[in-house]
Amino acid sequence: MPPHLVVDISAHGFGHLAMTAPVVEAVAHRVPGLKLTIRCAIPEAKLREMVRAPFEHIPRAFDIGMAMRDALHIDVPASLAHYTTLHGDWSARVAAAADALAALRPTVLLGNIPYLSIAAAAHAGIPAVAFCCLHWGEIFRHYCGDTAAAGGIEAEIRAAYASARVFLRPAPGIPMPGLANLVDIGPVGRVGALRRSGIVERLGRPGTTRLALLSLGGVPFPLDVSGWPDLGEWVVVSGMPVAGRHPGVVPIERLGLPYIDVFASVEAVVAKLGYGTVAEAGVNGRPVLYVPRDGWPEEPHLAGWLASHGRCAPVAEADLLRGGFVAAMERLCASPAPESPEPTGVAEAAARIVEMLARA
Image 1 (tube, rainbow, N blue to C red):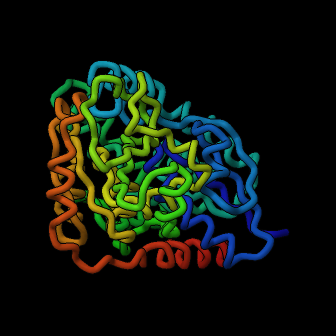
Image 2: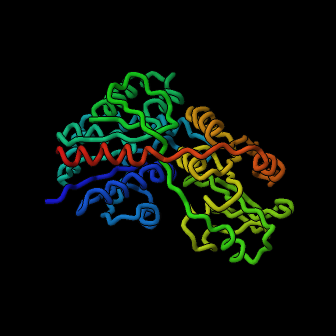
């Protein structure tokens, strides 16, 4: 019987999927005949776009990460309500999740980073790999740690992550004190094909056109581009839904190209700082003009890494909303570019998982 890898992915935007996809592909390449099951609430079409290996999809959400008002702002009361309900009957939820996981007969569970499924794997005696640049215990403590129930909830989250055989933290990652199973690896990101000339030609624009990619991840954000000023030589390829129309803004779907190829082919990326954007900006050498998030504790670590391994600069949310970011983007593009790091974490993570599949 071939080994069976079950992969559970948080659907808190697309960053967890972007981080996991190249590792899963590398494992599938190294293990012929691997049976692969992905449990995730992200739409299947997006999963198959990013994971180029055969898999069975089970639509399932194990966590919310944090409840979001939009891509940049946390809904703290809704988040606390979710965690309070989830942990109100924690043992029963773990047991039920363990039964569902065991029914799949996995060899190994890879979790990025739904701690309920990692706790379920431990309950069922299934080897588990936790894999992420953060864990929800640290994020929960940052936003909800001053509430009466926070201590017990955080303890259960940390115990779940500690139950994994190993917690692989790709660079750049946040501090995770107290995790004895923590192993640091290199950055994880996809490398895109350079298609700039083909994009400009497909858009019917002159060769002097400058391309930017706009994407705030998989969480919606209200943005009306109809009132933006003239963008000059710039064309903004929008990787997210926007309201209104603007002659300098085109939807990414119009290009008919993989997202990562568009990412690698533009001169600048306008985004929030999430792991997928930061790591892929580093390994593809793309500068990032970023809109700061609502006190997101991971952001300083991501910005610091990208400042050392790439280029980034903040832009105010108000400037994004009014389209007043072209001058800042041009200054960023004119700054010196360091040598791009290699995504060594892909092979490192894949090697760990392949070893566990062989030993189980």
